[in-house]
Length: 93
Image (cartoon, rainbow, N blue to C red; front, side, top):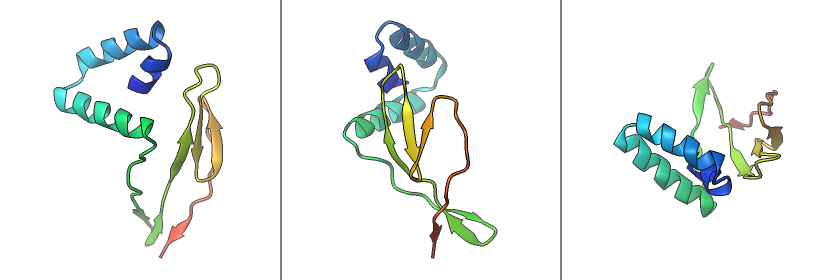
């Protein structure tokens, strides 16, 4: 939300302020830190989850902040706003 608010100062800033009023301080600080990392293209470390004895991972490799056409790339699959679909899950050994 913080990154969105920086790109859309009219609606985004008001939405961010409303959200900040409802969140705990530790969550706000974590969000501010993550937003700073994302701006520097420092993505969080990849975390593996165990599913049926197989390790799988979702990897976010890119986002756009264009409010008219926001996109995210997950496991080499591009998603638009409110879009859902299957993605290839690499198996870690």
